[in-house]
Image 1: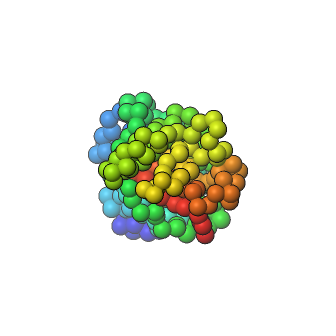
Image 2 (image 1 turned 45 degrees about the vertical axis):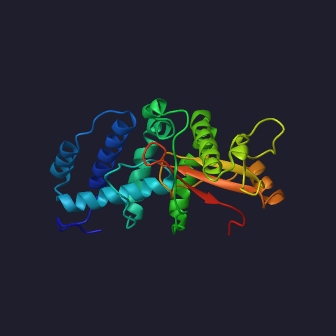
Image 3 (image 1 turned 90 degrees about the vertical axis):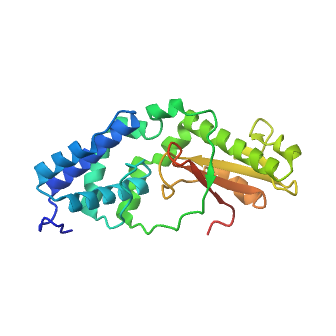
Length: 258
């Protein structure tokens, strides 16, 4: 891609802008202040690029990180025009930063979160086109498994959905059902995280998938979750909780998923 500076981004220049973005993200996840102006001046000085090409490239970095399943810098919305050269530069930085991958699941700021976060419902995102190279990067870092294995993050998502479902029922005059919403426990169907109800008292077997990343970040179903979706499609539901430390949103999915 050719920027306003009149020349393409070299591999070395991509390493600079991606490395700087990652440093800013590390500081943000650690709850440290970030001087964006100083960072941008450094990237301009080293690469010789003007402001707009740098901002555009930072947006492309946000897109790649979002698709892999990591949080992004909040003032750098994704731009979906990234290429394989940028993807490789991002992969190289992530491979060298295992602590960042851990912080992307459980950052320092997460410990200051309440036991349940108020959630805003949103529409599911449109499917993002991804080539085999991006799929390979997603599988390499496997953020969805990291998130599913983190009991603290998973527990926060479940508690937030329990609170939301109970509040929804109460606001619709079914406080009797609201009091019966609970995290899955021994004796409940295997593969669900929350037991909830429709207004008609029909059961909802909810699987909660939680991420600190955005709405396009990938996730999958465990074998138990998939089996439950096959056995109880009328009751099976997914709540995808995302941007948990930002706007804290979720969207709904139910079978069939194709």
